[in-house]
Image (cartoon, rainbow, N blue to C red; front, side, top):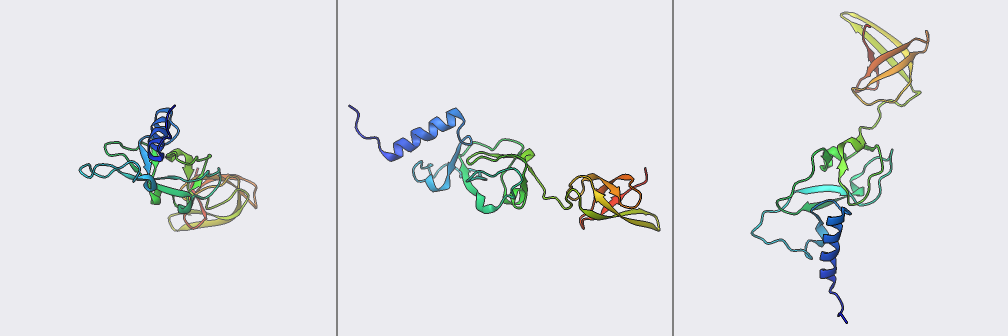
Length: 174
């Protein structure tokens, strides 16, 4: 009959099984568990990345409190097209469910909307010294730089315009 398994041996076995089956981000170790799997001091430190520490649902704003730092095992690199830095994640909106312990694909996050669908906005057409402004209703949400459709409140005509940083819409001649 086998004797009791030590906790650190159990953790190492669980980590190996999780890595092999894809249950956690490949080659990541939690900063809190670093003592259980010591890295030799002669090896360079691994890259530090951020991953969710709880489920983040679609439409939820990503806060730094919902993320944890992990250190990649030396010699291993994060996959391409994943967001792992605080500047890439803070204040962004999840497009889909983000699971704890997994990398966050760059395609799974977006900027917060500056204008919501159905909001009344100012629309500007600027050509040389001529500026025309009107009130319109957005037909879709958008962030700064997004091309969205709006309906002119007076004429009912649908226009396409670019969302500006101040929340107004700039249209061009078509």
